[in-house]
Image 1 (cartoon, helix red, strand yellow):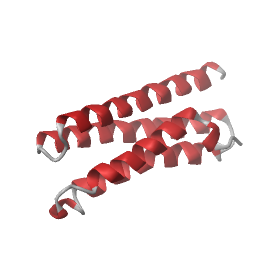
Image 2 (tube, one colour; image 1 turned 120 degrees about the horizontal axis):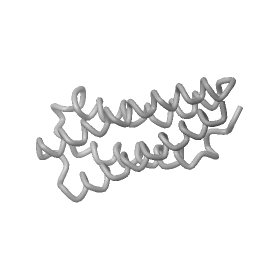
Image 3 (cartoon, rainbow, N blue to C red; image 1 turned 90 degrees about the vertical axis):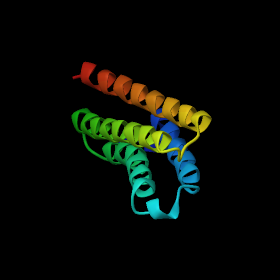
Image 4 (tube, rainbow, N blue to C red; image 1 turned 180 degrees about the vertical axis):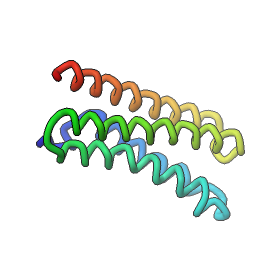
Length: 119
């Protein structure tokens, strides 16, 4: 069992979640149960799945939770695009957040490959 806090990808995804909570706080109130909720749920799902995977036995199970986290990151990527297209996120903020999501996805993919190579 690993401590999820020791993983750079968890640290990065947790920081991204905090940034997204801040970014979505300015979204229209009408979106509180819509896009705001979806972005927050998808972003929090990434570090949560990393943490849950660390608590599981075996690298295959850990890799499975990392794959789930990757799916949440892809979902988040779309929600950010939609928020930008709807003019809820300005281009500089969108670019920064989108780059962070892509970096987290790359980190997750690298860790999954490393785990599967150890099989």
